[in-house]
Image (cartoon, rainbow, N blue to C red; front, side, top):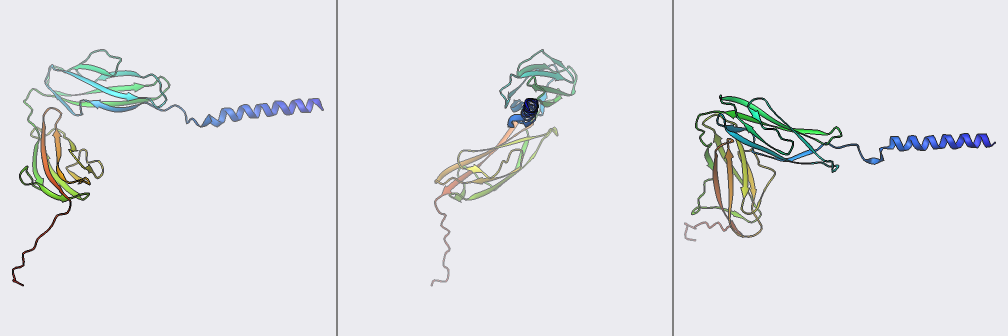
Length: 230
């Protein structure tokens, strides 16, 4: 009888150990690091032989210490094990890529790469055209509180470089994220007054911007003249 009880106890202990090992405790395993931001924006344009600093801000969901590894397809990358590195462009025109890999030492790895153009030619800023609707400081777009206003531009780059587009507003908010779009929907605030929406376009070296000027009204009164005399 005691032998059966001992065997049952051993079996029960094995089941407990197996359950603890397979249950995972709900932790979901190791999570990879996350790169929150990077500088400068990609793509990057530099002159031959120029120095360029690259950096990232990263975090680890598990709180692990992070290691940084940098590589470059061309040019000279000055040794770094931190979140920033200095790269020297080659003396000839062309393209290159700088990559940073962030690891947590437990198998979690994430990376980001900058695309780089090396050119000796002067870089001109992007061109913004066809801003709709038209506005100025003296002729603002009138809109009611909490209403939406569609805004749009056209963009081009004299060098044919890729463009980054950023929208910002002094008041109100945007419907969705308009980043890298030529259109944006601005939502007026719930208070009256002037507001500005600025769109900035960058080719990695030069930037151009346009400002939309708006006037938020409590209620816009549309007046129709009675020409019948009645």
